[in-house]
Image (cartoon, rainbow, N blue to C red; front, side, top):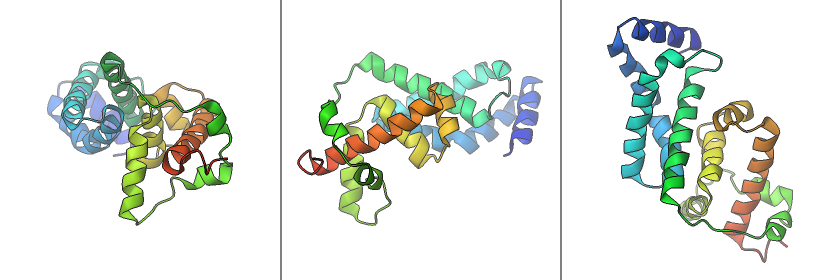
Length: 186
């Protein structure tokens, strides 16, 4: 659905054709779930949060101004709700010394997320991503899995474009350390 169609649907929903909201559920529920599950790491919690996201978006639909795409607005709600959920849970996340991350060569860090057919490598990468903070998982998911642009990722996370670029770079280095160990990063 393009932006023009979305705005038309939103107008019609707000005018009382609420059954049209199902189109947004069909279009975005899978990708919103993908983001949320990466952040909260629990299928049960993710399903509940996704339901809450769509309910909140429906109740707040009148506030959608059209400054960004509807999907960006929806991702923003999902991001906030998932991050809020993880903050309430207060999980412990792996801390890696800054000096170890800074010693990872850029080319090695940049290659860590290249597609692989090797199932073992995919499982190792998935396990490494699980050790990231919720915010880091969200940025990786939005940029690499949901293929959002740097600008869209910045808008969803309310970070500056420069900050998203820096964080993506640091997250790749962190993943490299998690996958290879700090011996290879020196």
